[in-house]
Length: 179
Image 1 (cartoon, rainbow, N blue to C red):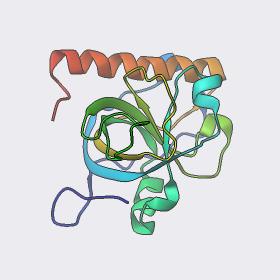
Image 2: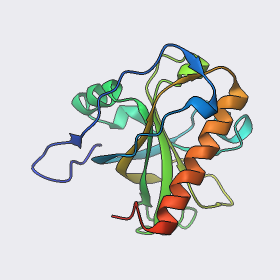
Image 3: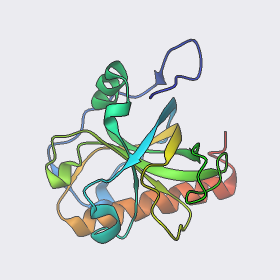
C-alpha cells in the first residue's frame, strides 16, 4: 500500500528515463533529488541475488500490495532511492515495530539483469541475523540517488550499489538526509 504524506498526493520531483546504454559504476550520475513518498507492504522473497550475488541483502516489498496508480508512477520513475524503513509487524521473530533504519532501495526492473517485472527492493543499513519474510515494512522514500541504469557487468552494478550505500551513509553522518 502506498501512503502519500499529504492531501492524498505523491510528490516526486524527478522523471528521468533509464538509459539503454550499459555504463560503469564510475559513470553513474548521482542526483540526490528530494522525494516525498511512503510505501508499505509485506516482505516477500525476491530473486535472491541481493544477498547471494551482490552481497547486499534486500527486503523485497510485494509489488501487488502497491496501488495500481502508484505502481504506474513508480514505473515511470525507476531508480535507486534513499530513506528510512520501519517494521510495522508485531512478531517476536521480526525487529521491533517502530524502529527506523536508514535504507537504500531500488524501484525498477533491474536493467542489468534484463528483468521486465517491477521490483521494490530495500537494503536496510543495519545487520540483521535473520530473514523477515512476511513482516510488514513501511518505506519512507526521501531522495532519488540515481536513475536505473544498465551496467556493463554485475561487478560494476555491485560497485555502484556499494557506492550508493557509502554516499548515503556519509550524508547521514553529516546530517544532510535526515527528515
